[in-house]
Image (tube, rainbow over all chains, first blue to last red; front, top):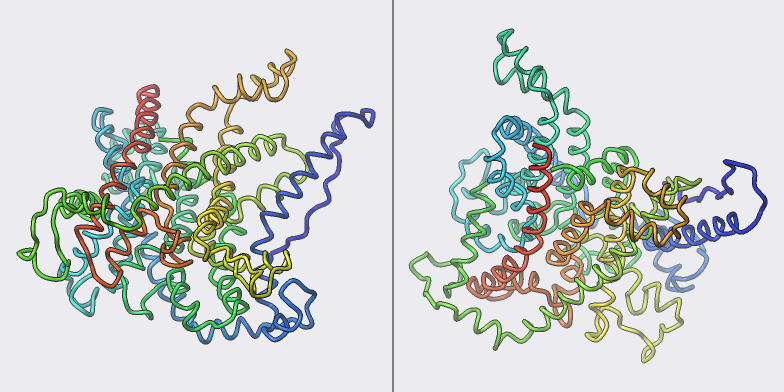
Length: 303
Length: 275
């Protein structure tokens, strides 16, 4: 990640005398640069702290030039926090949850997009409102439901959904389904009916219409939603906090709360663990920035 | 989805009317009517603090963070050099989980090892500012952390709105001699009405959902209480009190009906306009 700021140059659309306008522009750049530096600082500070040995910061203070830089804190966070295991749990939750959300969402959206408007009102309330509810409204009954709903062995080793990866996949998928369905439905409504009619006349089944026509046409939205949902599910803290109990079964985001204090004694290691846990979403942001932005704004501009 | 979202939402309301430890069978439930609410409002030591903190959170996001996000969006809409960098810097916190945001800010706030006190030179006993432990100031400190992420989110949403709006309107206003403030107030703001509704709704929902940052700091105690942490503590605390937690959850549900209704109204209008 490069934190170096490009040097802002004055705009050069049309030649004009250096004066009021360009001075204002310079002030604007100055203001924005200052704000960006402020915004990046907390993360940069975490990165800096994570690279310094505890002895170094203890001797010189945290606000100081480093005597030495090291990756020891990362090694300690990785080892003592058993982060490999937590990352594996995160992957085992995120991948199936996102796949399920996209598949189910696309299928549901296909149905919704072909309904009369009258039904859409009810469906809108059903899907969108569910996505906007604060999750705390649900956790008490959900916790009890997870303790009592019987689930067979391949999905659960204790007979219920509580403390199971399957349980986390289910709730994350359900909670995100509303948003996905609604965004995809808005996209699918834009597909002209004639396209589907023509394919139907050629003998295509409903499944084939969805798979071979609708999905390719909505690919940009699907890509944006995939990046966004992966970020959201990875970032979940509450579901895993309430619906799992065994430390080894907690995804990385939720595990951090247990680790600090219990396993990590100084802030240098906490900083290293924070950076490590932030890495997957930061990478996703760097690689899929366009998709992520699209995904975040889809709900605001469609629907 | 109905089973895992709507069923629990309705069940929360029903469970708020009983006394139950949540572990025994359903036959152990005792119907207490509105007793849990009465206890919450009169006996619970931190309920009103949680309500006040919720209002502080809403005001902080709504009056400072959201307007700041809109300001950044308007400034970045000029497509000047470096705006891609500025945008990325402001969006970066948006991809971090709120729990992680809590940890990153603990590195700034920690009494002896944190950045702020070191910067201010208050690192010896007696001089320390206990940003997260002092119940007079810790909610504000936590709010700054939450606002840090919220600003980027709003900038992103609003900038998308600005870029999808017709630029000729603003250009025309500028030609007619409107100042930038006038153009924003009388042209941009009315044109972006649908996006305005979205950011108001997002701000209200984020305030109602605030939880992770106070929770990772101290499990929402000692000045950092919110309705959401009362719910979670009723479930994860030493004694499970289902009725109590559900009553707090139901109040949270009632409060969230307002922004949800706002959002649905706008979405339905948009839909009927298109049909």
